[in-house]
Length: 335
Image (cartoon, rainbow, N blue to C red; front, side):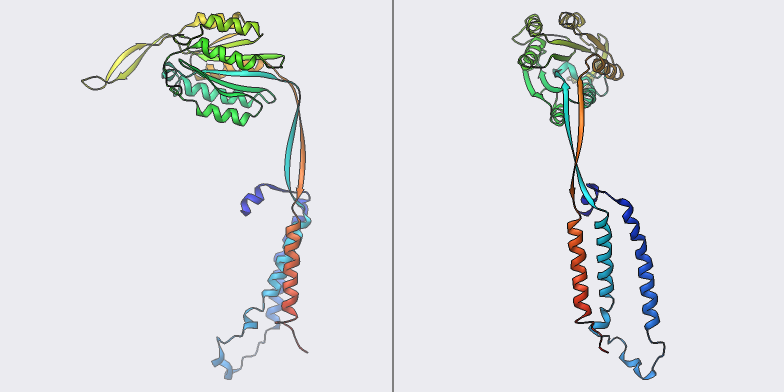
């Protein structure tokens, strides 16, 4: 609890804490004075009463300890501990962005590290973090399409949803690019933002679904939505381990890729097509989109403080009160 308190607290006058360096001097002086006051003469006839110290003798240092605690609390209180709350206000013109992820089985191919989908998630996470002020949503698709996260300025929610994306999330296999694009357009069509974009990430092999890509393309053009397409992978042969009656065997497999379709979707919506062949290329593509679509956002931060010195002052007064009571009752000295 003390660690959590310290991590969320800052001091308005931290230089006051330097007074705590006087505490070792105060303790040293008390010990020196206490030793000087003890009797130096030993009486041989009292050796048998050792270990029979009274209650007052055992607790004779308690008033000084309480005073030290009170002083420490007062010094920390004078440094004005306070909790800071930062509020941000966004002013300007943001961009509404839908991230459209292909989660079909082909996105689990290992030509990326660790696979196409996981690499896409990692890079999309960085992209979201670099878009303050924009509203971002997520659509996923295989044979079906689904809005995983509607447009929102809460980027923490978007990032959390990205991490939940898995191949097979929608169960039905297929790659319905038209359905995924149409769902993304539907989420953006009522947007009031002057700039609306879709980032469609897929291997481009379209089959299944109820809406053909050409129809989704016309929808995007009608609502003035740019489509940036990212083709993940390439047409190349890879080795794949499959089960057989004789046990696991290695087969050669040609990865599928439909580049013309993705180029068409981008060109006809004034977007841009990119081809990602590995993790580094995918990272650079998102950086390029980040430069092409800039938001006119001015972020103003306000700091609000809540003073936290009151409990320390109360604790110091409590320690002083207990010390005074002890000195004038149990430890009272009579002339």
